[in-house]
Amino acid sequence: MINFLIPIQQALAADQPTDFGPAGDLGAYVNLILPKLIEVLGGIAFLVFIIAGYIYMTSQGDQAKIGLAKELIIGAITGILLLFLIGVLKSQIGF
Image (tube, rainbow, N blue to C red; front, top):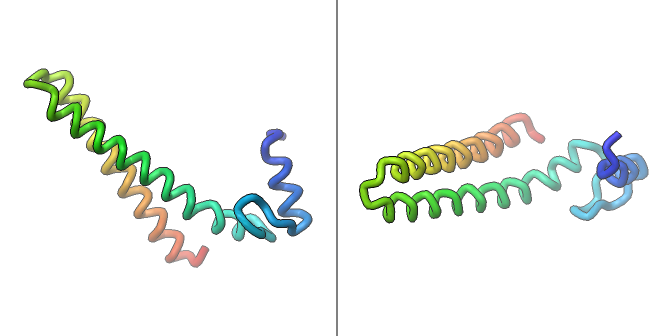
């Protein structure tokens, strides 16, 4: 088994508080971690979007840089949409 999961499994089995708060089962643990994870990933996607905009503005007509910037922008928007979809699915299934 993966060693870094052992403290999580012990906390779940003993109904002890974790670093993110008390979690009695896997669903509760996911509910504690998911909002923080969405915030971090959303921040990363926003930074990628800003970096891609900078690359696009400083490309000076270089098609390779323009293409890279467009790919990064599409990837950042896709990531933000997936994070939004995760939030919608979480609320719909009552997790």
